[in-house]
Amino acid sequence: MSTLSVLKIENLVAGYEQRVLLRNLFLCVPEPAFVAIIGHNGCGKTTLFRALTGQIPYQGRVDIAGRGLRTIRRPAAAGLLAHLPQRSVVSFPIEVRELVVMGRYRHHRFLGSYTAQDYTLAEAALARVGAVHLLRRDFTQLSGGEQQLVWLAQLSLQDAALYLLDEPTQQLDVYYRRRVFDLLRGWVADQQKTILCITHDLDNLATQPGYLLNLSRPQPQLRSLSTSAVQTERAFLESEESLAAHGEIVG
Ligand SMILES: Nc1ncnc2c1ncn2[C@@H]1O[C@H](COP(=O)(O)OP(=O)(O)OP(=O)(O)O)[C@@H](O)[C@H]1O
Image (cartoon, rainbow, N blue to C red):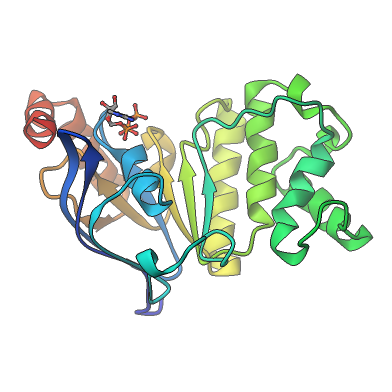
């Protein structure tokens, strides 16, 4: 692994009005890497992504691929960030392949200009997540888990320095959860991507190479993923002590 840092966070403070959820966070994420972000409900995991995607203000400094985040007007359009939020709603009928091909938007400025090659890439992306059978279906009629696979296929077509995934396996059954973690492992190993992945799916993390960041810890730090690291963090999260620590942070 190289020593380059795709994401560097210094002294980040973020939250909502009177409620500071992230206090003095320091983070240096090597490239490529898989980073699982864990912690209690409400500890600030999604809030961290909101700060990184410019949805809420923050104090401190964030560099992505060596560029100050504040200096970049649209980080996604600049190819720095790709973000899969916890919930995305589509309110109009649209074929799955039309939604997936939009992952190629940075290569095409105008709607309707996708090429046959783009559609081939979209189909391949769907195949990789095990959802190629959904290609011609209306996205709005799919189950929550099927929709999640489609979003992942679209995300995989975006060519970004850093991927932010908010609970990507939330609605998936055990088979697809495992498959998605395998897929993410491939993005890192084969395509040299760096992924921050919010998850409560500790069972699947034990065998995943990468790092763990527990935002319920009073001073969250990256630690290498391993069976014993996952066991330690699980024991911490199950303890009363961890809730007390969480209370101090948000108080
Ligand atoms: N716009 C907002 N204004 C005020 N408080 C908010 C706002 N959005 C979220 N919160 C609160 O901030 C806290 C952290 O929310 P966040 O979504 O970051 O939690 P999380 O760690 O991602 O939790 P979960 O695991 O349940 O998804 C929660 O208590 C939430 O109610």
